[in-house]
Image (tube, chains in turn red, yellow):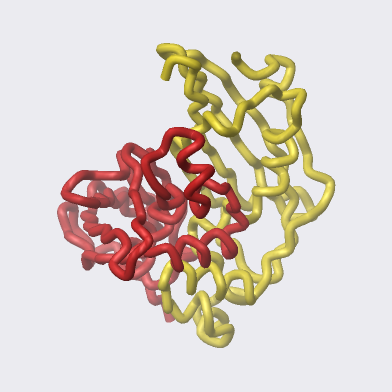
Length: 143
Length: 149
């Protein structure tokens, strides 16, 4: 049985369930280990300062991974994702406190392809009221 | 200083394979706070028609890291990593990646262009199974900030 929505049940403009995620320093450490991205700017204050950054910023790929959750939550089966891309337009700074940084993700169906039975989804990521991803888009295979 | 142009367009096959691990998928999913059963429960993944746990869409970064770093951190390339900003990233799947997959990476620096004193490096990694069948392609752009940026 397929977890993936039926092509016929999806319309252009459909909004996906939004997602709000908190990124704190602990998540940066976990993500660094899980993704094998050990770039020091994501955990060392002195390295960040030495390259002119005002603080520790989240891995762009972490923000992208969280954005992907909006899509995979919707399709159910992550194997239905055929393509996923984004630009990184603004950094997300993560303070060393309990709150961290909060990112709000929303998404909507941008286009449908009846022959391929695929949907194109646009994702918006906002932190401090500003978008941090540009042209974040996924193509998924519907059932 | 742009990178050494002799690196552009040349395939860099990484000699060692990457084997996708069950625990690595679980750790990656947990790191992004995702409890999707297809990332954690092997029976659920099999019931959905997969051979084993499915890798999250951006898990590809972990697969290509060694192949990519081997070239990007080669001093002969001439890349100053302290000036690098991640510009964009894209994953194109020929099929889902699942636990147990043995994958081989071939890395390319596709292009280098200077825009207002910054160098834009177009990167690509072709990921294939042991028979050479394509599994996914990972694209990325690195922006190397110029001395005045």
